[in-house]
Length: 409
Ligand SMILES: NC(=O)C1=CN([C@@H]2O[C@H](COP(=O)(O)OP(=O)(O)OC[C@H]3O[C@@H](n4cnc5c(N)ncnc54)[C@H](OP(=O)(O)O)[C@@H]3O)[C@@H](O)[C@H]2O)C=CC1
Ligand SMILES: O=C(O)CCC(=O)C(=O)O
Image 1 (cartoon, protein in one colour):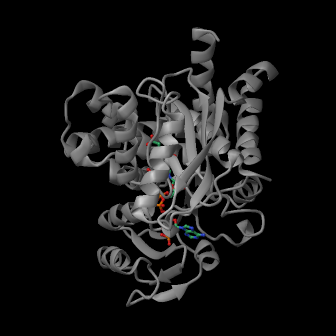
Image 2 (cartoon, rainbow, N blue to C red):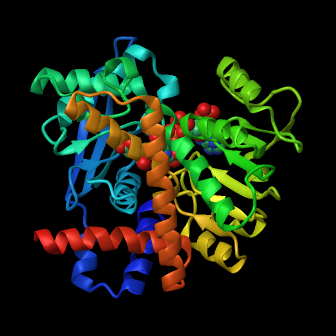
């Protein structure tokens, strides 16, 4: 099964519970536009390389389309479609005035120089600038991209359209970016962990956490959980992981990983593989890297009491069914990692108003959006007697469906 099939199955299951008509299902699950462009650039050695870039715009019933840009070798149409549809439901779950989109280029940014990355990014914008923009579709960071890439996107877009800081979010703070966007997804996951602990009537302090992925999302998530008093006992990246049963020293691990480019070799820890990490007996397991890492082949081994999906699409539907049988609570991606797009929205609002918010204001508003959305999804789950993923889809699909019907096609 592909990422696109998985996304469709989750949608179909919720649509079934909602009793959505076949016509409405087709309308809501068909993307508006799929853009596939050639990205040809001269590399540092003088050779011309040709890559493929994608931007899939899934739905705009509730506002301009919004979603990140991924640079990763496995990017393809199916993955980008799945991620774009997740954005539609995610922006609706947290009630932002946006639709959903996603983009990507099939490259490995670690194997490219800064100059090559810049030329690829600018060329991609040359090819798609007429279909994106502050009122159309607003890109942002995802795996393999960061604030610098967003700065290049803004600069290149402005060559065609003039001053438009709201054409992209996740920009550097010195270049119309929002304070707090970089940390937002990880902080949002931390807020969700605390909300979940509250519902389970357990303090977050002392809860054990295993975290896969130590990039933007994973590293900030580890920091906030550590600050809240949770015990982050294992962390991994693409090279492997580290474990300390008494809790890793996260501030030191952040320094170590920044210096060494990986977590493995961190003192006062044992080495652990990614598969071992996913099977640890912990209170909370947080996948914060690739999609599809929890599947029918390893779901039975998972011993965590709860899973919070910081990554997009980390759990296949087969694994999800196994978790339901094992009574493992899964907080779905479209709720758990919505902190990033929420602060992207705050950045877009600031850019459009030419007015800068203070960091405290960003954090306070993020806290409100995440905790209110968690409560809303929890209530739908109780009311409809479904698990949290289906509840989140019901909430998101309901909002998008009502906007579609009210506004007309
Ligand atoms: N950035 C954002 O604001 C948002 C991101 N997300 C999702 O969160 C996830 C992570 O994104 P982000 O943190 O931005 O990406 P980054 O590129 O910053 O970090 C990715 C992390 O995943 C690790 N990784 C890559 N491959 C593997 C692997 N095979 N096994 C274990 N770890 C691996 C990387 O390790 P290494 O560094 O060694 O390569 C790195 O630690 C993605 O699913 C993304 O879609 C969701 C919402 C918003
Ligand atoms: O910040 C954004 O606009 C989108 C972030 C994103 O790509 C995601 O939530 O998956």
